[in-house]
Length: 346
Ligand code: WQD
Image: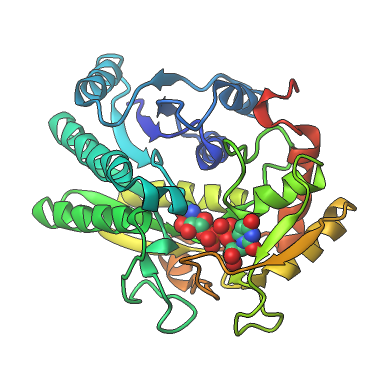
C-alpha cells in the first residue's frame, strides 16, 4: 500500500532540508504549509535537488476541516497518511514574549487541532519539532532529556505544553507513537547552495545574521555580551548542521513507524561553540570579514548550552556528522549565491 507522510511547515528552513532527506530515504512527503514563513520558491528549489515536484497543499494547522479534507483525499487516492511530521510553528523567542497569544494559538492550539484531525482519520504516528528552549537555565551541562523542564519564554512554554499533550495522548492510546525532537541550534545549508535559511526581516538568530553581514546586507554583528563565564566570555551553543538535523527527522519517522509510545530526544552534536569561535570559523570558511561590536547581553539569554546526544544515538541510530567548518562553508555557499534569499533569481 502506498503511504503519505504529511509534513506541516514543509516549506520552511527545516522543512525543505528535511524533504530532501525524506525523498532520498524513499518517503512520499506531502507538504501542508500556510506560507507565513516558508516559500514556494524554496519548494521549487527542493524539486531541483530531488528531481521531482513535492506535492503541497496550502493550509493552516488551525483549520480542522482543511486537515480532514487532506486526510480524506490521501485515503481515497490509495495513499493514506500514515505519519505526520509537525514542523509548522512560530519560533522567535523575543516575538513570543511580545505576542504570547499569537504563539500559543499557533503552536499549541494548532497542534491540538492537528491531533484531533489525526484522531478522526485514525493516524497514529507523530513526530514533533520541539526545542532545547524547554530546558531553560541549565542545572548541569550537557543537557540530558531528563534535565528539568523550565522554559523562560512563551515560545519555549508552547513547546513544553505540546510535549505534555503528546505524553498524555500516548498514555491514553498505547498504539499512538509520538517522537519529540528537541533541537539545539541548527545552522548552515544544503551543500548545493540552492536552499538555506531565509528569515523574514532582520535575523534574530546569529548565523543568518553573520551570513548577511558577510554578504554585505548588514553592517556588523552585535555580540550579545562578552562577560559570560566562558573561555572567551561569549555565549556558547551546540550548533548542528541543518542536513544532520534533517536526517534526524528521517530516523525519527522510521522510529515512530516501528515503535508506539512517547520518546523525547535531543538533536545536537554534544559540542559547544562560542560566538567568537563561530565568527572566526565563518571568516575562515567564507574568506569574508565579519565586523563585530560587543553589545550588552540579550535579555533572557543563557550563557552556555549544549546537548548530550547519546539517547538519539541509542534509540534513533542518529549522530551528527558535520563539523562547524562545514556548517559555515555550506551556509556561505547558500548566502553568497542568494544574497536576497529566495527572492534572488537562481
Ligand atoms: C545564539 C548565540 C546569542 C544573535 C534560539 C531559540 C531556540 C532555537 C534557536 C528554535 C547566543 C548570540 C545571537 C546576535 C549574538 N530556535 N547572538 N548576536 O538564542 O541559542 O536559540 O534560536 O527552536 O529555541 O531560543 O540562538 O542564534 O539567537 O543565539 O551574539 O545578533 O548567539 O547571545 O549566545 P539561541 P541565537
